Amino acid sequence: MVITATSPITTVTTKPISTPADQIVLAQLMSMGFSDDLVAVPRRIICSVEGKPFTGKTHFSLTAPEPILFFNVDLGTEGVVHKFQKGMGGKAGKQILVHNVQVPKLVSTDKDRYTILWKETKDRIKRACDLSKGTMVLDTETEVNELARLAHFGKTAQVMPHQYGEVNRELRDLMDEIFGSKLSCIFIRKMKPKWVGGNRTSEYEGSGWSDMEYKCQVNLTMYREDTEHGPEFSALIKKCRQNPSVNDRLLVGPMNDFGFLLNLVHGVEKE
Figure 1 (cartoon, rainbow, N blue to C red):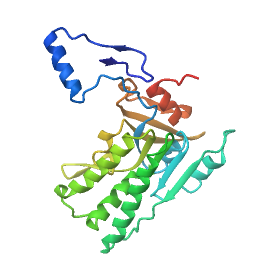
Figure 2: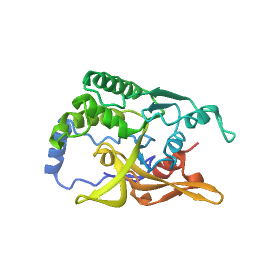
Figure 3: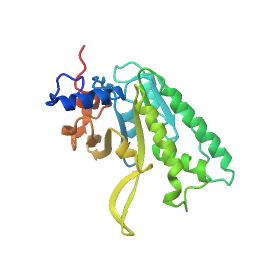
Figure 4: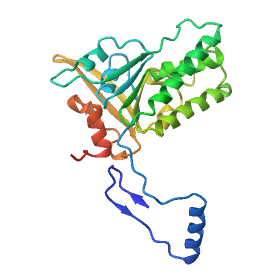
């Protein structure tokens, strides 16, 4: 079955099965749980948004559809969320529910504190997935990943890669919950220097769960350029699984908006 790259799906063609033997095998497979039913494509995006400080990551995330469930782990959003709640530029205020996740910054030997906080955070994420529409924002996924590691190890350093199995499983389970929902989800990520062969390079890369970019449908990198007319913000589409034709496209000015990205990926929604 061939499906067009954008949604809503407008063209479906089925390749005919040429032999009776194949028809028998297909019938058996369908009796075993396979299906050729056309699955509706949710009009949403699950994406990672990375960038250096003050590049507009939080602002971009709040241009997404409401209600917005905002997990504030970074605690650096003062003034940004408020202006969207209040409304600006002639637009009505948005329904934004903020949950502050206060992770103790000094790593304690009392691992139970982190275990309880991690469980509470997971429970809230899973409950948010029951909504029929809206957007979940994790600001930042970098610190959510850190909380998961603190909950399991009581520390983030001197942990061997092979020990991360349970942490990775829990993060994959959360991603499954999010993909099973109808929500858009935005994982805001910090950036860190990129190291190659023990040497620091001039490049930066996303900091957080190593599988995040692979799991997400869209990966964005945010940029800021200070001009004589003021700062100019932009978003680079590094990868778009649903519509690869937009890969490497730079969204500048009014295009640097979640609604514009949604139309770019899924097509303009019909009235």
